[in-house]
Amino acid sequence: MHELDPDDLPSIRRLATVTADDVHALARILVDCVEAGASVSFMLPLPIHKAEAFWQKIADAVERGERALLVAEDEEGLVGTVHLVLDQPENQPHRADLSKLLVMRRARRRGIGDALMRGAEQLALQCGKSLLVLDTASSDAERLYERLGWQRCGVIPGYALLPDGGLCDTTFFYRELHN
Image 1 (tube, one colour):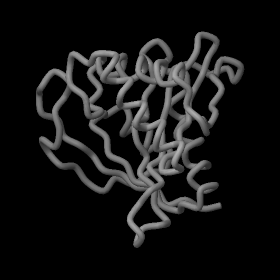
Image 2 (cartoon, helix red, strand yellow):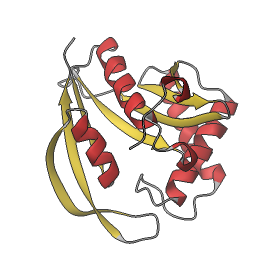
Image 3 (cartoon, rainbow, N blue to C red):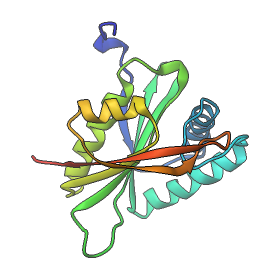
Image 4 (tube, one colour):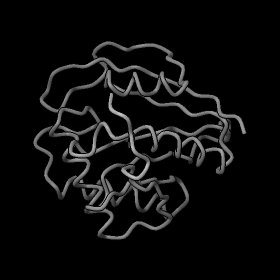
């Protein structure tokens, strides 16, 4: 792996309000990732209007305080995102789900996924969460999560479909957070 120059890293920021332009940019990220084969709840072909409808729902949940959204941005615009599902059952106020870690193909291998994950962990602590959980169907993501100290819980075979229709396994992880 090549050495990362800190000046080449995109900025990571929280979106407290999600604009129509943000929704469109996030939809482009989602479409790009699904077209690259990411199993993130959507099938091919993924029309931009369907991706925008998904992100508008997330934007509405951010507005209500049910989710917290981080984005990564470089000189060309938004290139990555991850969000926390903060709204949990009343017996799980200490927990959040980490969801939709997405990085556009053109921006991969630059430390963006790592930066988004670290940002999400810090944001979770700021939101009063001490336990994060996630699931993934990506071996690349599994390596990132393990490198960052996430604990693998197990694998469910044939849990979901890949965007082209083939079955894929899903691995579940958790991470206990400490100040």
